[in-house]
Image (cartoon, rainbow, N blue to C red; front, side, top):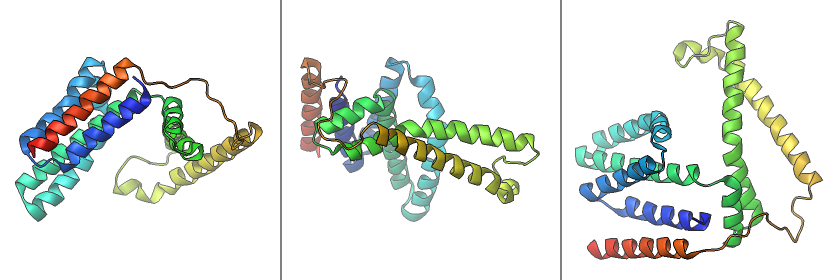
Length: 216
């Protein structure tokens, strides 16, 4: 599907997940992205992403449990799970350059679209550099495992990571300048057009949003 279609569906799904308060409906919303992930063969990647999401969800749930009670805590947990799973699917099935082209087609300024997609592309690059720096520092006898004992040694990680990030940003700026970034009349490799599948998916999303609004 066109990236704009997937983005609009993800936004509509997010609106329902944020506003919905019924536990049964939220449970269904949290289950839907999981079923889609299994259908697309992304179940293992989704489970790996949960290793980062579960601590965040648990902390939010514990705070809500203490402040408002069990039912509100369960609602918050299901809502966070549904939102994070939906956008996991969106970003796993949409290339950054396709997202940039689609956003520009929707009228978003190219500079903003470029910043957003560049940040998406550089996250895995920075992650690899962090892993490499941690391995290098460990080989020198510097403990960088997560925990309080390693806290005094984190400068040995942060300083090289920051220096590497500034170097990447400088190289990116020079590459952008050499390619005439910001010049008018920019063209794109791919022309984004909404097809029948896109209109059908958007119609189903709009109908679902309307039926949900009527059920409130």
